[in-house]
Length: 80
Image 1: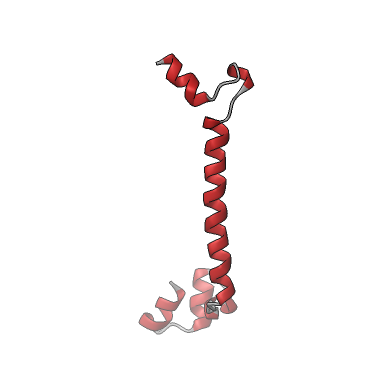
Image 2: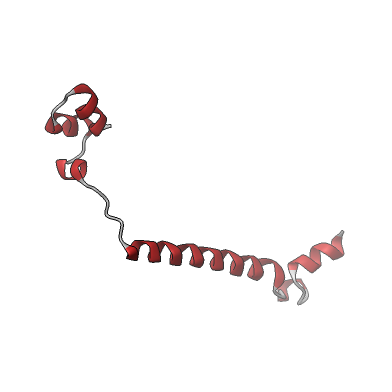
């Protein structure tokens, strides 16, 4: 929004930053693409997928002693 105010409304950077409550450093920040960022993003996606798969297995496929040592999925099949 501050960049829009500067480019479209000819506001000064200082005025735009004050109006939108941001610092001039924040206004001027440019993200840098780094090969390490791509690697980190790939790891985060894989970790998230693995965690989701593990949680599903833990909650649905593993034997649960509270319901007679069978998997919850099997318990639902028996109830139906």
